[in-house]
Length: 203
Image (cartoon, rainbow, N blue to C red):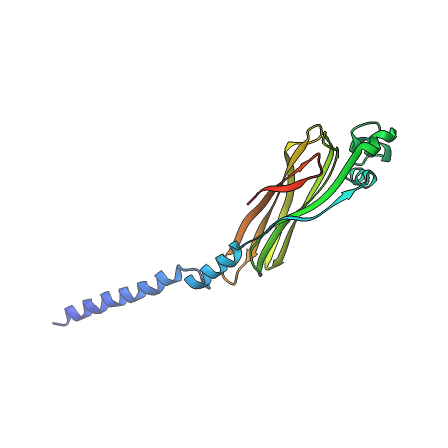
């Protein structure tokens, strides 16, 4: 008569022991569905993408950029920027240059992050591009960090009437929980020999 209750007690004990083991598999500090959805919304919110500033630049200013970037002598830098013999005054006079800054943003504080690009380019107006130099930076506002900003020419360039440049960077953002939010932001900017600049694509 006592055997059946004892077996029931043993089964009950085993069943109760399994519940904590199952719960322990869940990472500590996990967000509720509402918290996770809100964090994802703040992280993914699109922001501004476009030209931040644009102005004309002198050939000498761009030659200084070329000297620093490529380790050229002053005369070689002028020749590089104008695409011709820098001692010819008419070549200097016929070369136009511009500098443009642009960006693409994503996220709301504390997950705000953006990629900034800057490009100098010189050209014969309505003709060909003679020189182009770009740089990229990864910027954040909040709990994110930016890594490995990079850029490269996609198409066109010196000898063409246009050029397209790709900029991108990686980001990683801390959350109040056990995991991080990560992504890569990128944009592509185009420039032509009329002094125009615009973003063609953004992530």
